[in-house]
Image (cartoon, rainbow, N blue to C red; front, side, top):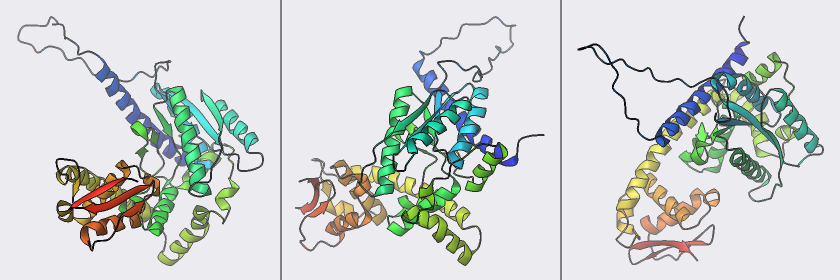
Length: 367
């Protein structure tokens, strides 16, 4: 008898991501090699030379094997992910390790982090890190904790030379992210939710975006894996918690089942559209600058609004505006310097960046 269907589903999701990583690792290794000069092999006259089959990745794990880390909080999603990685990685010749981050926001958090690290080691993961971070206040408690967590994961990946860090975000998390983006009115990029691959060099991978939260929890139960339910996830003081326990259930009650799946599908469609528009904007930006590199207002005006606003956003970020603090309302104000010019003054943007129209040119710079 095979594994429980939930266990099989999480293992398959992780296996696919590991196959992608091995393919990338193999291609990078090939790029680093000098071109091989094939030696002539003897063969019968008139017969084609024998073909050498492509080499498959070895299942032997060595120090030269790529290392994949799993970020584990001790919750059901990340514990299921850790167990699947521990099972699949050795079969594919991949080293597997884990990282747990102690945010220090609850009593006993250090003890729990040590327990999670011990469980990761018991699964056979190595190396395993338990990292303590200091959470700031910028952007609110949820954003500050997220920033501290990703900084710790980045540092762990750099320290160990990891090829990737796996994250346990599920389809339910994706639906929540889409709704939060919709509430902010931040545009199609926010509606695209979390990408399956993100971070510098594609460091972060999310194998479970097509699986629901219950599948991960069921997989843990089937394997008798202990999990920890973070009380912050049920605390109505946090926006995501209210959305999870009040907002989404209300939507499902009003609209019927399938809301989560529909929102996750919306995320993928929005991501495809946003990627295409970003590529268009990158090309268009070169065509709307004068020889001195300044943006020409007349040429900007001729662009479709979705493309023009992307060009303006890119220009503001290049000038020093923090991407996370640059909202749709900021870009709309700058856009009015192009489409609704009435002699208005400069627009102040985050990061001490100023946008103003001068002699038919749009100047965006730090003040």
